Image 1 (cartoon, rainbow, N blue to C red):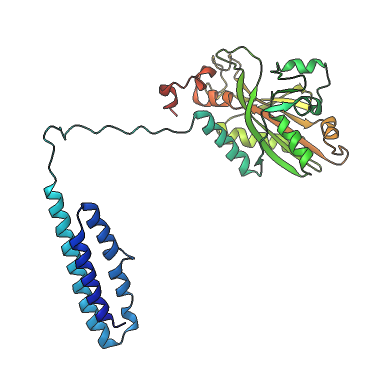
Image 2 (tube, rainbow, N blue to C red):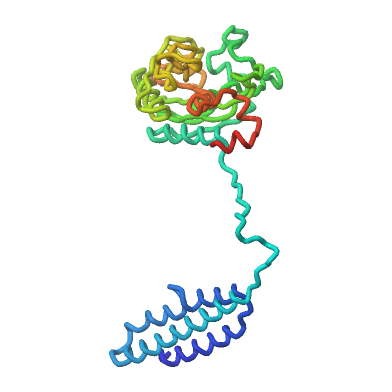
Length: 337
């Protein structure tokens, strides 16, 4: 179609649509339709390079006239419409408006996301599992023999004799190892439950992040490197670490990890009980009996595991003194994060 004819048609269409506008929104929509970067007038300008030299001059001139006319009519209409709006004299327009209050992620969710992100940087994926578990996944497969005193380390909420609320997310590690073959490198964050008295330092429900790396020739040195990387990323590059021998049924050798108190710089304060150190997590090399329970050959593979609570690192990092604050839904507390 001849571009001159098209320009006349668009002018006629615009005049018709302009006459039908009844509101400020209508004029704004009309402006977008004809004058935006992808609007009707802009699309005609894109046709000019296809024309001959003589046609370009004529078409360009008429298109500029069309654009200016459309701009002026819409601008005048919008200004006129705005002037007609009446101000409610009963309203004090000098008063500040009512602020909008927006929600945000809970502090524990923020800390969980940060922990997940740090481990993701060094190749750990995320695996999850159910909070209602079997005795086998939660205890027996993790080298807790039936009636063994080690089970007393964790006071458990039993639903039936063999079904319980998980006491740690190590049960997820069992599920993954029974479903997949090495190499495995993942963390398992989630809620856990223990029958404990609720006070400023403990709760019957809390969160854990546990990690597992299984492959050929995995060493304790790799475990130390992984833990050190996490602690320095989470608590700061100047934090110092120490590993203390410990006992866990599912790892051997086992260790507990302390970090230097970043509140007092290691000189001793109330938070670190004047020792200069803060206990942060447990870890160790996976016990061969755990590998046997999931069908892995401990002669061919090794691995390490670690686990930490989420509330405790959050309390240490942000100076929170009472674990119950996480669950009280006090808006004054939550808005600080």
